[in-house]
Length: 216
Image (cartoon, rainbow, N blue to C red; front, side, top):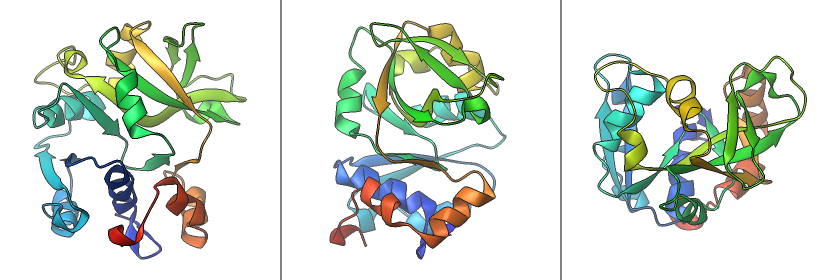
């Protein structure tokens, strides 16, 4: 909910999904989730339906994904981090999550990968390895925070307890996740300096989410 150019960051994600005519969005909420709910409401302002998956206790990224997926009716769906944006063709990403894989993950190249979990791709474009807290650093491919997943993958997430999608689930699925490399805009606002960067210049962010007049 941190503001960028007068709008909370999450609204830029809503604009991005609206640009691809995504009609239903499920937001996973935990602590102070009512702040998000009060701002976005049912989604009518953006021409979509917004539903909320409320975590009574913290479930981790894996448990939160399983909870939210229970409100998704489609067999394939997009999963977005709430604190980063990556320029990606959402429809093509969904198509990449075809029946021969469990999902497709958007990857981006960063100059310093030690802050993120790095990803290695095989020659056939499938993910060959996930490396959390990779100490090697340097230029790397990393998870850009936008995936297309199949409900079949959700069934593999432990039920009834917290879990990490990145640490507990995905590393066991190498060869079953397709990697889609984006050369477009990417930003993770999880550091004070990147948030300040966005506050002072949001033009690239606006272009990445394809904002149009009807989403103002």
